[in-house]
Image (cartoon, rainbow, N blue to C red; front, side, top):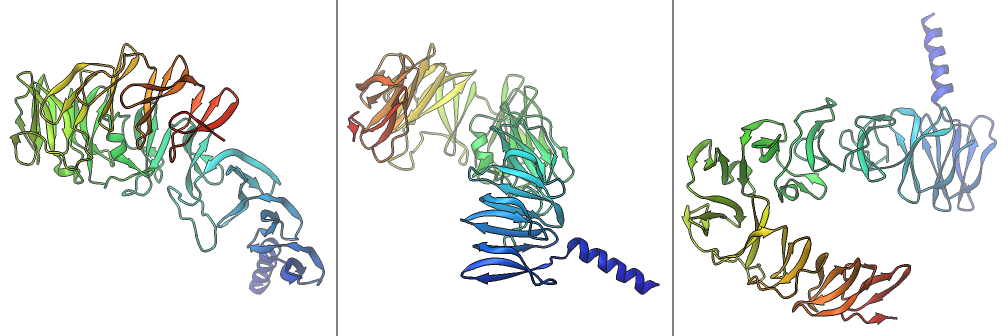
Length: 449
């Protein structure tokens, strides 16, 4: 009786999962022969055939992938860039078309059951991708759908709504991701499927520190400043606080070891230095930010540089000739300009200040002007936008009256605003458009045939 049961289970397993075909080659083309009937069940038309255990056959024709079932009947035509098997799951495969879009195909229903998304299948947030076999496990991936992102547990389960602007994995803490939505962040544990942090904001510039090459590079013990409900504190990617969110301002230098980083914070209108778990008064009027290892502060209406390593006030020494001699800082939501000689070149009156190649793009009354490194205006405040062009020929791109033109480093317009689009320059050449007409120009505005 026991033998009969085991034998019956073997027959059931064989009928459900076994492949009945043998791959053969003829005239450099692959076909499939039924091993029991010895009949040809798939003609010699394929450039490659691969057995997908328990599922069927992955076939290639004209460099495109398709799928046959276990009896070699066509399930998916050879029109896909790739088809992925989910290891241990014979019910679904993932397809990828020529535009890089992914879809989930149901073997049982013979139809696409989820589509219109792009998934990073090679770098899952949780669950491995097998580079040897090309299989993916029941795993969690970041998907993009019309510019919004979510987490998908393959094959079909969304863990979050498709509404996030950015989702990046935490390298030091596998299974955790940093979510961004409308300039607010949260940390999500994909293993436990729950949020582990409250919603928080980051300081200007800290997002680039936290996120590098589309991954959160912080170690699990590294702390960083967060703003929660309008108050600042210090937190790590495990959502543990070193300082609770109760400070009106908090600045932390972006040193490699965030646990030893110089930190200044403001509480009840007074500034303090926090270091190694100890707090001491820092008698300054305002803390602007950091420049190298210097804390930039205002004291007695003067800009001063405080060496955070030597605990001294002194002048900044530029590290290389290519370093900019000026830097923009924010005070009470307005931008000002400081040089490395402890001089406030532009008071904190501007909506925006950007420094590029020792030139200054300053914004006031919703218009930009070009200034030199001393703060002297080279143009009037008349541009809607200013951005880098080509440094070798000292050219910038501007936008005025809804059109784009070119200006040089001296503030002289090279090309009047007439283009509806100008691309970034590459090797001194940019693509331009006047409505639907497109061509290329050099840095002088000459059309390149």
